[in-house]
Image (cartoon, rainbow, N blue to C red):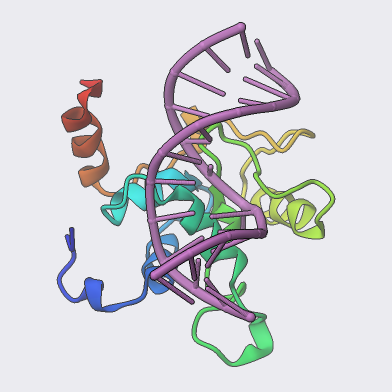
Length: 132
DNA sequence: ATGGTGACTCGCG
DNA sequence: GCGCGAGCCACCA
């Protein structure tokens, strides 16, 4: 399932970070879609896990919450998926609004407007899996 | 190797 | 639309 040559050598986390960095400002995508782009249809949870594991900006590591636009990843329903008690939830909404994404008070985002579909491979996978 | 843990998703009711 | 239960996955003790 290594669709991108050389990519399979990277850890799953890094693959997730690289894909996230492809999301244009003002757009969002879902954990599940990123999983699909990586050829792992059911690895949505792992994607969320990877993003939650991002290190602090001052950690000196290559992938941090500052170099990876984690805020552009929401759940499949277009909703901020972090538990509302967590400060990161409010931060995600603020970051998104700052780049022009409309987020309502319930953390909901209109995917018809802001969805980044990513690679065409995603759509293809949908069709082959019986949706078309 | 094994079991626990989520920033997931889907199907039901 | 919401809460549950049940799969599914990569990591880490």
